[in-house]
Image (cartoon, rainbow, N blue to C red):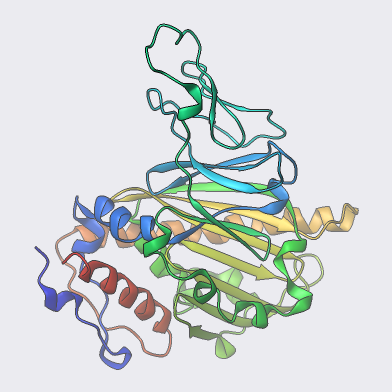
Length: 358
């Protein structure tokens, strides 16, 4: 049992980081799924990946396989990607214009509405009616062109409160729905998912870990602010026309594992997926304004290369931190109130979630 004192709220001026046990104890993945992921809104896709009936996207919600699909009626639904027969996958990858959803294990086939349509050779099963079988469904919200879903909507944040203030900050010229999907890149990282989020939430490490990124951002003007369910970091950006041009960089983190990295002409979404107590997968989807000119293609390739450079720097330090947390040496250190206020905000949300089952 975790001593409740470890989970008491802390003021920013005197805050310490979470103890190592929350990153290394073997029972944390199950606790995190039950207390955090199943009770939150998680990002699945952008609407440009689900344009037409039968288009579908698969994802991992902290161990729960899910599938988002555009129905024949135009609605986007999200289902458990687990066949009701013997737990085979309904789909193993994203796809386009499917007429139905067919489990590749035994061929049980579901409509785009999640209702079972056929089950091969089940005629001898007494009192079995295919229409009685349906895939469990999640709550769905589409906001700024992004598709979010919640396993347990009753215990998830009110969605309007979840995104409150972001639309006004983006303004009419930076709406995210206008982008088109371009590419997905994923990284397997040997660290707890919270280590990766901690790292994302502060620019304190940028001058020390990211020399290339540090040249583009104005660290002296770097601002981090927090809201109820998200935080954002902002900095002026000077990169030249071959990459992003000038403007500003805006980085949103949304509880618990979604990031929106917004630069001129580009949206990058980032999902941190737990894969074990000391493993996670970080999935990046790159979206750009629709432009097939040679200059635009060149900028996209430069963006992908630069992003890969930054991510390799991040995952290296995150894996080092995970080893330090598991070493038995670490005691919670003081947070920097100026630079780590968003880390403190994240840790307070974690403490509140853990207090519900302390």
